[in-house]
Image (cartoon, rainbow, N blue to C red; front, side):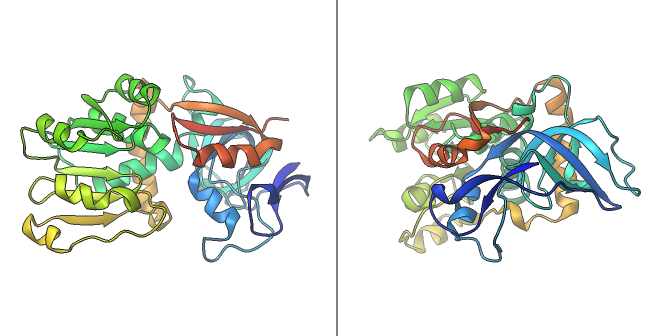
Length: 321
């Protein structure tokens, strides 16, 4: 089998495609032939050595989709030949094969391609936890997805719309805003526009949104607090540095700043999330958006793309033999 290997932390160039030993599943494990692997910003932090606890050498990747090639003796929930997507693995998904615990393997609806399957776990599980576990979103509330054209933002727009929330989405490019509108946002905003705050207030009758999902807190958190409705919640999904805020802002409106990190989710929480996603994925109410498919050998280029401005869906690696 082939896999991307990292022997030293550093820039994208440290990732190399290598021949490695074939894998065999243990009693509770599933061997998946990976056809496509999702690329997430978190993968770039792992590659750069910014995530504590990562040991070298390693293969990056949490998302993938493919076909079950073999199962362990105690596996009962999936069978050889099944089309699946994976939510994490035991050794990384940037490879032609990955070992997973049975709980990490989920049925992939026939209507979805492997590339779309590779765009499910991190974006949709993150967005679901941000909306419903951290922000406790309720039907009838308004959510501003600040940075809605990326894979997590698009998942949040779809999930919020399906749950009966009023959805405002922002993006920095015309094509990104068109994409957010197609995914169901009630109103789409340019987050570079000088009058964005005024437009958010106008769209909410001057009250502000009850929830903001923030993809770049290091740039926007202070303004988010100014925008929130009383007792509003901002959920920090992404940040690339430090920011100074006035804590008085949180006191005046009894506002909450909440972080979300998918790695903190327990196996039981993840099982609940994927159970909640199942019907929407099967019917098309939830539809992963793939921006570009990149060959596995060009993983370094994919890492540059995923951090570049102008996000418009998920970057996916093609891993098939």
